[in-house]
Length: 280
Image (cartoon, rainbow, N blue to C red; front, side, top):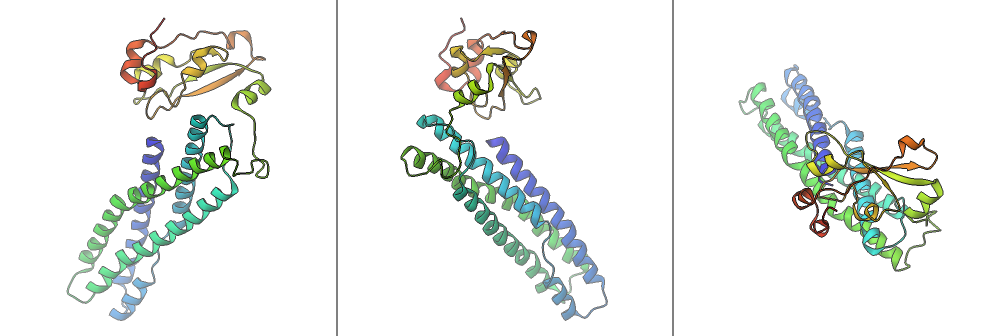
């Protein structure tokens, strides 16, 4: 989840950079115009932040991913049937949250950027000095606001996803009325004719030795290790996943070559609860 969080913060900061460029260019044109001081103040006060669609899209997508993550994790812990999507109630919450967060951000940033500039027009500062002040304000917004926004959403979204799982297990949520699937993951795999799974790691500069050693290994889904080792969960921030293989695949593409990871790698990288399993 940390990777997703950092990516969301990064994307919001890119929006801040784009907003800064547009806002400063508009202000520069106004300051260079032959308008009176009062006309310039009025024009600057009417500038509004752009890229609202991009901002909302980042907030909405992050909220959705975190809610779904929390639902999935809680479902596993509580051993309830797998639900593949969020409820209409949570989707409405995401939409409302996106609007609320967006409105607050755009109103606050508009004021934070505009008021200091308006207050300093006519006080002897050059256009360059005024624009530099505006640039510093945007830099401070970029550094602090995105992280604060994402962290604020994170806790609420985790609660929403987990709360849905609790309501399902307590019988307070009508799965069928929402059109949810009530199949377990095992039911789905059996229905699809899946017989094996291949561990797939992201082989970049951030991959750990444990995940790199497992990449490409194929396991029979009846093997106990399939349930024991979970890509994406074997350690904190794991990005691995299972690639499922159907029985209709060519034999050479579903040849079992699974070997449990070395105990030394488990001890160094794996979560505490699975470090004790020794390599056979």
